[in-house]
Image 1 (cartoon, rainbow, N blue to C red):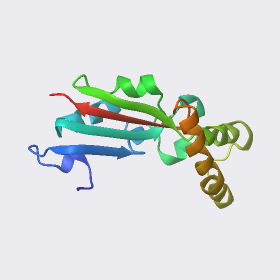
Image 2: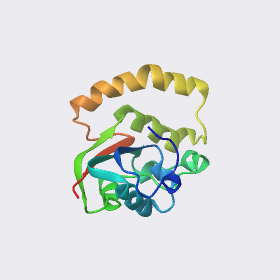
Image 3: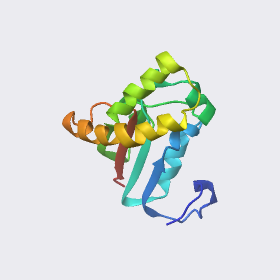
Image 4: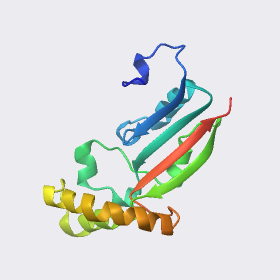
Length: 151
């Protein structure tokens, strides 16, 4: 396991998996980043991306965190190279979508309070895990994609 950026790797390095957890939305040229990541994957290797979903949920909180964008299935798929095959593309945290929408329309807060975070962790996340399964991961404030390198 290695932590860091792809630019710091030796050109000959190859990996079974590369994981981006809440990273891609911070990178201005996301398509170039995915291409670079693909170059470091072994054949059969996986690119796993988790990022915020739905541009219509973009708020000052996203800006404060340094996000350039949020994704949906189409926009995330559009940055994926042709030699990667989609294994899974789903939404997560259905209840979090409602909280994010409430913040966007009502609270308009650029940062959640500790009380809001605790409420989300204790109530909304456990509820989301159950609801996400019931709605077959069709809606949520995050999107998860898993792609496998063909060649």
